[in-house]
Length: 243
Ligand SMILES: NC(=O)c1ccc[n+]([C@@H]2O[C@H](COP(=O)([O-])OP(=O)(O)OC[C@H]3O[C@@H](n4cnc5c(N)ncnc54)[C@H](OP(=O)(O)O)[C@@H]3O)[C@@H](O)[C@H]2O)c1
Image (tube, rainbow, N blue to C red; front, top):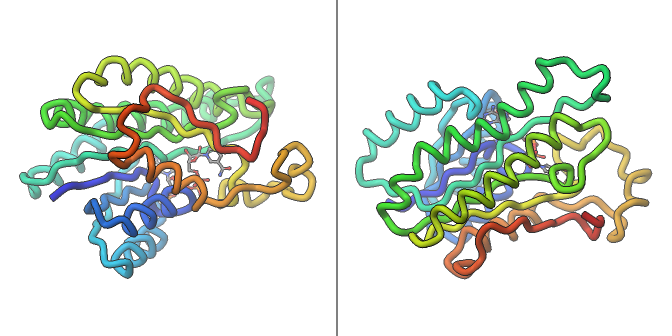
């Protein structure tokens, strides 16, 4: 059984990625989420409607012990399962000006994106290398590339993940494991639901927010065999915002 794991697969961009990968039917989908079980079940139902298979794995990607416990249990129950694709998509924002930022909001944002990448990717990396094939896709952000005022914590988390992407890509390229980052601009999801698109679209050359499905199309390409000679890249998907 060949598998793809999508962290934060219950809602938003992660859900769109699960659905896109389900359409292609190459992988059994491991849909991770943190707390919204209803949403995770909806994603799984959509995956199954498309004739693909999947299952839900609840764990906080930022919690090393919990991640290892759940993934170890899953691997023991499924000894023949091979994870080929890892989409490190789980991420949160806790926005605010740096001068008023609480340490808690700094820690939790960095923990989810950066430790989340470590915890999930590190669990599988030796297996990918032994298997001599893998696709690792890290969801970063325009904020991690150009920096965004009010998001020092988030920009730091995503910028660090860009560095990790480039470094790991060089370590594992010989074994046909690629590591790339996808950097969306403003995408319509719960994360941006309070943003005023009418006001903000003035700074986007395409004059609109993006759809989660548009990001999912790019991720599906990077997750496929067609992207074999692309690694260590950060691919912007932001309607033309200069970054
Ligand atoms: N939307 C944008 O404009 C935008 C732009 C650039 C980058 N991004 C990035 O794209 C990714 C997805 O964003 P989104 O807009 O789809 O966000 P979203 O709609 O808020 O969904 C976030 C997803 O991440 C999961 N999650 C959050 N913390 C988690 C944790 N500790 N462990 C496991 N899962 C966790 C959530 O699970 P629950 O359902 O259980 O809460 C949910 O599935 C994030 O990394 C975000 O930073 C988004």
